[in-house]
Length: 96
Length: 96
DNA sequence: TGAATAGTTGAGCAAGTATTCATATATTAC
DNA sequence: GTAATATATGAATACTTGCTCAACTATTCA
Image 1 (cartoon, rainbow over the protein chains, first blue to last red):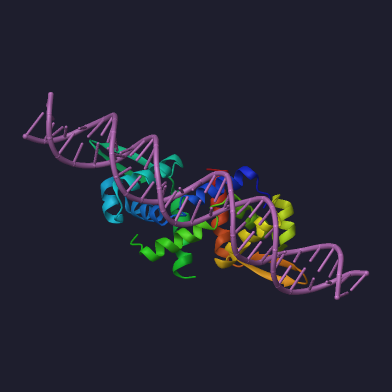
Image 2: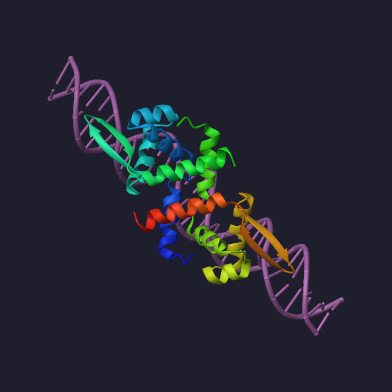
C-alpha cells in the first residue's frame, strides 16, 4: 500500500469527518439538499451553537459550503466523494 | 436520507475505525497481507503495546482477525468493505 | 434608531482517546 | 524446572473532542 505519513494523516482526517453521529446526521440531511442552520438544529434536536461548531469543522475540511441569504446561512455538500463514502458505509452497516 | 439514530451511530463507529493515522497505517499494512504484531510495530515505528491496543479496538469492531501461531499473533483484515472505504478515501486525498 | 432574529465564536468543562509504562500470560528453548 | 520471547492488558497521563453558555456580529423589521 506504501502510504506516506502525510497520506495517513489526511485519510484519518477525511474519515474523522464522518466519525461522529452528529456529523453523520448533518451530512445525511445535506445529501437531501441545501439546508439552513436552524432547520438542521431542529431536525437533529441540537442547539444551533452545537450545529454551528460542527459545521465549522466540516467547512474547514471543505466538505460543506455556506451560502448566506439575509440573516440565514444555507449549507450544502461541497464534496461528492464524501457522499460515496457515506453510502458505502451505510450499505455496510445496513446489510453486512 | 432518513437515517435512524442507530444507523448514524453505527456509521460513525465504522468511520471511526479509520479516523486515526495509526489505524489507517495498520489497515494499509494489513491490506498487503497477514502480519504479526511485532512486524507492524517495527514498520509503523510504534511500540508493540500501542499497536496491540489499537488492534484490540479493530478486533472489537470485527475489522481484523487474529490467528495465533506459537507465541506470535498474525492479524489480517476481516472486512473487505473497509478496504473499499480505504481506497475511496485514498483516491480522494491523492487526486482530489 | 432600537429590538428581534440567525448564526458564529471563544472559553470552559466533561468525556473520550492514544500512548507509555509496568505487569501479566502464554509459548518456546534450554 | 528456569529463562527468554511475543503479545496482551490495566493504570496513568496527555491530548483531543463535542457540547453548553455567554457574548458577539450581521441582518431585518418596526
